[in-house]
Image 1 (cartoon, rainbow, N blue to C red):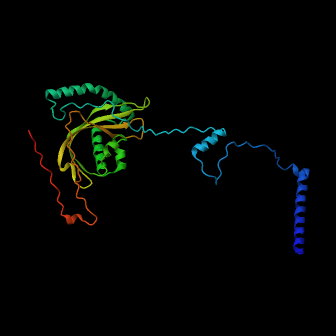
Image 2 (spheres, rainbow, N blue to C red):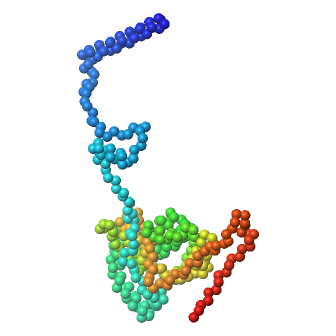
Image 3 (cartoon, one colour):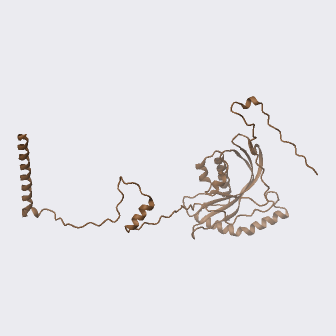
Length: 317
């Protein structure tokens, strides 16, 4: 015990002598000129202290009230939604198809009247074509109908195969929900047979939106073709159409492009349905016929249940 105490005294004596020698060296004027000067100052008082790590969680309202008491101004939060200006929200100055189109000959009296009316309305289209050519020099009314027909065929082929990535590149953000709505549990079989008449441009407009100079090009193309369409429900039953019987279809397609953007392209934007168009065929829906109420120990196959036939309706005069 005495030996350990003696060793501790010797160790403390050595440490004390070392500290004193270092202090004497610091007091030397030759050494003090090379030491950096230290100026004491008071730090800024912190009015808002963040909560500790192990503290109980406070609600956002409590933290905001505490910050206001400390004098900290909390910035107001705004719920901002992104605006997509890649396409317009509708069809500007839509084309009005003449009644009897695709049935009247251009040599008849009514056909000549329609042709004359189209020539009168083509003045505004010529101005829009000039504006489109300023931003898209390759635009041509003679070659564009073939390009529009190709976009139309590829978009519907992508829809039947549910290729969303390709469909987004062929149709606008306005047209996409209209094409895919209600097709989640259905099977689509569509085929383009042939063109009955060459497609042609019938209407051109170039409106601006949001700001002046933000131009969009809208071109209406008339397509008269033969197509086949068949829609099956999730049970595999035919709801509409026939895969083997083609039908004559007259459509007025609107294609749009954001002219100001250098990365834009012509995409399918919508379809104009004339007021004189015939009504669509009704859809055959699959309905469930309620069966008998089974007990826990019964089986449906053992009951030999027969579906009741609908009763005949008698009409009285």
